[in-house]
Length: 345
Image 1 (cartoon, one colour):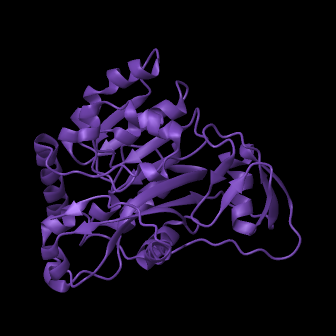
Image 2 (cartoon, rainbow, N blue to C red):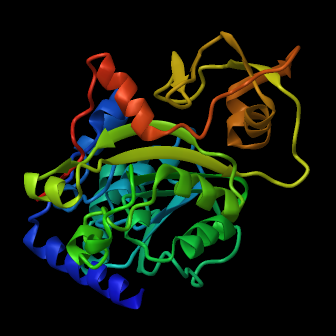
């Protein structure tokens, strides 16, 4: 496992210098206000964006956020705008060259956002062991395109859970495989570096999040990975996908019954509606019945400020733990297909 971490670090150290690997920003998932913020991120930062899809937690003003595997800091700086001068964002990454790039752009973004002092911090670290950080010290944790690169995923999920405050949110975008990679590719470190052989299957991801203590994830977005003909042949037609999921560390003894919830329209940039996941969008002023777990989340977490809740009558079934490949097939059957996030050649 140490060998894999070393190889990943060296690959992205080199890539940060050569800038010969490109990932697309999933702007089709972003609101106009978030697209505007992205357009203001320093070009050298975005040139070194190597994520599987930006995930933007909503309603985070004044919050403390951790980005696990922050790379050059693109998401860190986006979130530093959203948390405002009273919030803070910490970025950690295995790759020293990318952390240096992030540190070099802190003053630029502080000035761009009009802050008196920076609200960002960067350090080199390993997602499997973040002993530098205190237990329950973050309101929100984000990560994109990193857990697929981590050899010990049990430790990585456990660390994210440890660092999250009770009732905090973990918003993860990562790469997933439809089937296990062929055994003859397990030693292909380039395939690991590009998120293939180290990616979990959807059911493995759900098991990992559950084992760590998180609620069942809610699928929010997908974007396919494009494979060259050579890799398609080596992988025997297997598919890979980037997918975003939100999950929570709920405090103990916080369960409640199903509820009729009404979104107030008071999240900036989401005034008319708030997309929770692929199946549920809350329209402002419209009551929606949700089951016990989602009602508990909307009662106990920061989202409580954005909803009115009343007890629901009868049983309610809210979908969660959705399979990203099933969802991709569904939207493709309707003639909709999101662009590829990146290409493996």
